[in-house]
Length: 197
Image (cartoon, rainbow, N blue to C red):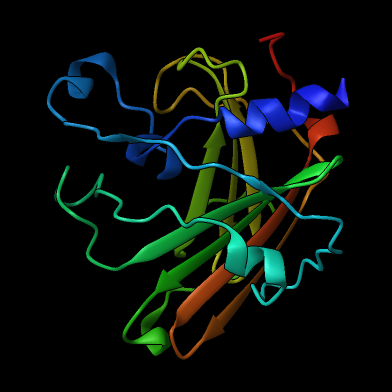
């Protein structure tokens, strides 16, 4: 079954709406011109990935970056006000996500510490994985600038349909630096379900 993981990852379909973690209700999908993009995850090549919030391992430099995202709020459909780059890696066991959120004033990054799965006003990166490729359901993983992890399952295509009983074992670390902040995630494939395609 592991051979299907790499294939599923390479086929993962990412759009601005999915990467921002927002599933748009059907009536809003027509008003927002979502530009679908595809980005390939690359194999780590046997490189040990240390989840420390630093994107300094060689595979991160080799992976293509998804960027040029669009806003969901406050100006729906407009280019993002700050640049974000997201990269995807995988090995036989897990998906790795590395993100760089640029910020010209890192001292203004909202970085509150809360309990796990508690939403706050902190800046965060949200990744939703449509592993069934049905564009209706998704596993969502988020981490705030302070390293607080949040995860849930979207059982249907509604923005606020969230099943918080989904409680996977996964890792995430973040770092704030002079360029903004970074997030590094490791999501084991054993914590996800896939269709047979």
